[in-house]
Every structure is written in C-alpha cells, then in structure tokens.
Length: 95
Image 1 (cartoon, rainbow, N blue to C red):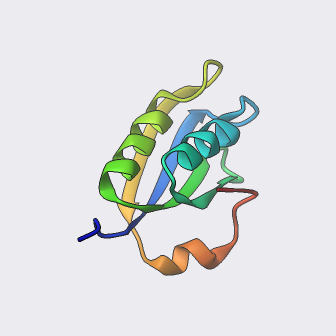
Image 2 (cartoon, rainbow, N blue to C red; image 1 turned 135 degrees about the vertical axis):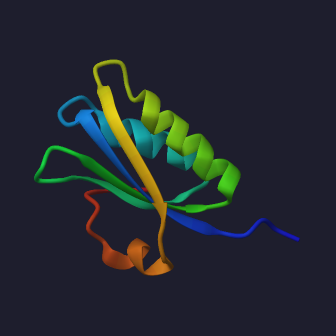
C-alpha cells in the first residue's frame, strides 16, 4: 500500500525574496518527487504548495526552514490544504 498523498501550504517569512529561495525549494521538491509550486507574495513572503507523502513533505519543510545561504527565515507556517490548492496555478516556479 502506498503512502497517502497530502498537500501542504507553506508560508515562509524573512529575507526570502531575491535570494534564490524559490529555485532552492523547487530543486529539493523535485529531488523528493513532490508536485506543486512556489511564488513570491506581495508582502515579502514566499508561498509554497506541495503534494506528496508526509515524509517527503516534512523533508521539504525542513529545507525551507533552512533556506539557501543568503536567506534568513524568521517564520515558517505550514498547514494541510486541499488538492484544489495545486491547481490554483499561482506559482511562478513549478515542480
């Protein structure tokens, strides 16, 4: 039996725009075989929606909490969301 597919919405605040954050997260998401997207928000945050097994999603959250070298993560919030979030297509970086 395969592990259930979950969908997480992750919002990251801090110095997360202009530092390669979305590309960093997308590379890790692809490595973890997750589906989803990431985008910059008008308020300076980065929003990530990712779908896959819990273990891979947890690993992505830890990667996002760390961020790339030039980033500074001040706050990270995650919540489970619905499959509908995947098709919002609001992301400017898809994985």
